[in-house]
Length: 409
Image 1 (spheres, rainbow, N blue to C red):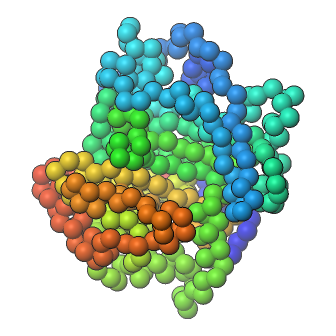
Image 2 (spheres, rainbow, N blue to C red):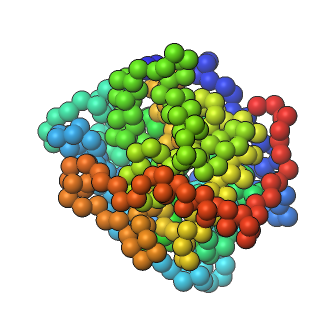
């Protein structure tokens, strides 16, 4: 396994010039970036943020669990989050005379720093004895009692639309492509920041998942450490004995799943499938056909196709039942400095919904011991999702937007 990452070996980020960007500052200094659809009708000018805001809250503090070596971020400022506001007070809608929201202007896609982040830039008083910033990954990976570190990193909100309700799956292909471009560009930018070890784009959807805002949005977390899930993956890569073709763990997984009965969607660049050992009643993975460690390494053509396939997948997930399906759509990426040649960008979408009116709750074996018991056979789940995708395609066909096929990568 490759443990380090050389910038010289990384492909340059392929920027889609059809999508305009503008960077601004909110009234308290947080960064706000607008990404405009390729076919936008918005004027390029953006209004400034004229609110009078309180200073940003002090950094959260990480405490280490010596039983596992894992870090827990104690972010008390998150207790002040808005919970399910009415449309006229939506903090992610464009500002209006009665709604002093986070985004001053009309927009297509907007990305901004979270107001109360779990991981943020170092803001606290340097005389605070608990405010010891991480020195290195090695520092964070050692284990001891009573260890604390500042929760240094960055958390961003990605607004998919100015509308009050919806999700990624309710967007147009053009809008989906803009969001994917934002994921790719922000992954490149965040990975280049000092102290960032891993970048994680994701979408939580539905009150059953714990969502507090119905506005269509996702988040990007940038951690100062490699997350526990990825640490386990690095260990699996070390233990795995690849086949003779030398494609490694992810290449072998892709070939294994493409040859089976759990494939849901397959394009030129991506394949979506229910994994062989699915834990959740609804669980879907999606892999690119070539090795790319993160969104920043994808080509324009790969992002174009993903905008179409991902919408079809999400609309199929919503078509499983009469009401929208709650889910976590997690885009796992390789760490910034480790395993870049081994860990491939991968979507892992999971939902606890095991029937129209039933949710899977983690019981003792799963929650306490991490020993999972599946409720639905993966092959049955795959057949159900394929049928749902077909229904969704028939009801609302996803028509591709203009492609960048042939553009330089």
